[in-house]
Length: 99
Image 1 (spheres, helix red, strand yellow):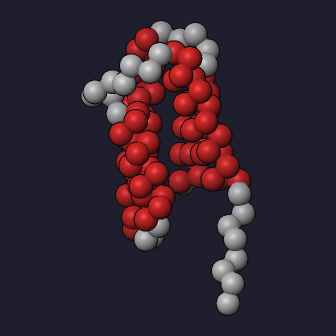
Image 2 (cartoon, helix red, strand yellow; image 1 turned 45 degrees about the horizontal axis):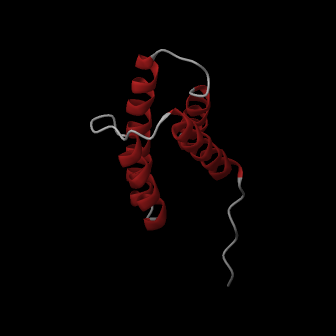
Protein backbone atom coordinates (compact mmCIF):
# COMPACT_ATOMS: atom_id res chain seq x y z
CA UNK A 1 0.00 0.00 0.00
CA UNK A 2 2.83 2.41 0.80
CA UNK A 3 4.38 1.92 -2.61
CA UNK A 4 1.06 2.68 -4.26
CA UNK A 5 0.76 5.90 -2.26
CA UNK A 6 4.28 6.90 -3.21
CA UNK A 7 3.72 6.25 -6.92
CA UNK A 8 0.36 8.03 -6.86
CA UNK A 9 1.78 11.06 -5.07
CA UNK A 10 4.75 11.16 -7.46
CA UNK A 11 2.35 11.26 -10.43
CA UNK A 12 0.28 13.98 -8.77
CA UNK A 13 3.41 16.04 -8.09
CA UNK A 14 4.58 15.65 -11.68
CA UNK A 15 1.16 16.75 -12.91
CA UNK A 16 1.83 20.08 -11.20
CA UNK A 17 4.16 20.86 -14.10
CA UNK A 18 1.08 21.26 -16.28
CA UNK A 19 -1.02 24.43 -16.20
CA UNK A 20 -3.76 23.63 -13.69
CA UNK A 21 -6.30 25.74 -11.80
CA UNK A 22 -5.06 27.18 -8.50
CA UNK A 23 -7.41 24.91 -6.52
CA UNK A 24 -5.60 21.85 -7.87
CA UNK A 25 -2.33 22.99 -6.32
CA UNK A 26 -4.04 23.49 -2.97
CA UNK A 27 -5.49 19.97 -3.22
CA UNK A 28 -2.00 18.64 -4.00
CA UNK A 29 -0.65 20.30 -0.86
CA UNK A 30 -3.33 18.60 1.27
CA UNK A 31 -2.72 15.24 -0.39
CA UNK A 32 1.06 15.55 -0.02
CA UNK A 33 0.90 16.64 3.62
CA UNK A 34 -1.49 13.82 4.50
CA UNK A 35 0.56 11.21 2.59
CA UNK A 36 3.88 12.31 4.08
CA UNK A 37 2.30 12.30 7.53
CA UNK A 38 1.14 8.73 6.99
CA UNK A 39 4.55 7.70 5.64
CA UNK A 40 6.25 9.29 8.67
CA UNK A 41 3.94 7.40 11.01
CA UNK A 42 4.56 4.16 9.13
CA UNK A 43 8.34 4.69 9.18
CA UNK A 44 8.16 5.39 12.91
CA UNK A 45 6.34 2.09 13.46
CA UNK A 46 9.22 0.26 11.77
CA UNK A 47 11.89 2.27 13.67
CA UNK A 48 13.30 4.03 10.58
CA UNK A 49 14.23 7.35 12.20
CA UNK A 50 15.94 8.83 9.13
CA UNK A 51 12.87 8.21 7.00
CA UNK A 52 10.65 9.70 9.73
CA UNK A 53 12.68 12.92 9.68
CA UNK A 54 12.60 13.16 5.87
CA UNK A 55 8.84 12.56 5.71
CA UNK A 56 8.16 15.06 8.51
CA UNK A 57 10.24 17.68 6.71
CA UNK A 58 8.31 17.03 3.48
CA UNK A 59 5.01 17.14 5.36
CA UNK A 60 5.95 20.58 6.72
CA UNK A 61 7.14 21.74 3.30
CA UNK A 62 3.86 20.81 1.61
CA UNK A 63 1.47 21.66 4.46
CA UNK A 64 -1.32 23.92 3.17
CA UNK A 65 -1.87 26.15 6.21
CA UNK A 66 1.20 28.41 6.13
CA UNK A 67 2.20 28.63 2.49
CA UNK A 68 5.80 29.03 1.45
CA UNK A 69 6.03 31.54 -1.38
CA UNK A 70 8.74 29.83 -3.43
CA UNK A 71 7.47 30.83 -6.85
CA UNK A 72 6.25 28.55 -9.60
CA UNK A 73 9.70 27.70 -10.98
CA UNK A 74 11.15 26.67 -7.62
CA UNK A 75 8.00 24.71 -6.72
CA UNK A 76 8.32 22.86 -10.04
CA UNK A 77 11.89 21.91 -9.14
CA UNK A 78 10.78 20.78 -5.67
CA UNK A 79 7.91 18.76 -7.14
CA UNK A 80 10.19 16.97 -9.61
CA UNK A 81 12.92 16.25 -7.03
CA UNK A 82 10.41 14.91 -4.50
CA UNK A 83 8.60 12.84 -7.16
CA UNK A 84 11.88 11.31 -8.32
CA UNK A 85 12.84 10.60 -4.70
CA UNK A 86 9.52 8.85 -4.09
CA UNK A 87 9.89 6.76 -7.25
CA UNK A 88 13.48 5.92 -6.34
CA UNK A 89 12.37 4.75 -2.88
CA UNK A 90 9.82 2.44 -4.50
CA UNK A 91 12.03 0.88 -7.14
CA UNK A 92 15.34 0.57 -5.32
CA UNK A 93 16.24 -2.83 -3.96
CA UNK A 94 16.95 -2.84 -0.25
CA UNK A 95 20.52 -3.69 0.59
CA UNK A 96 21.10 -6.95 2.43
CA UNK A 97 22.54 -6.55 5.92
CA UNK A 98 26.10 -7.76 6.29
CA UNK A 99 26.73 -10.29 9.00
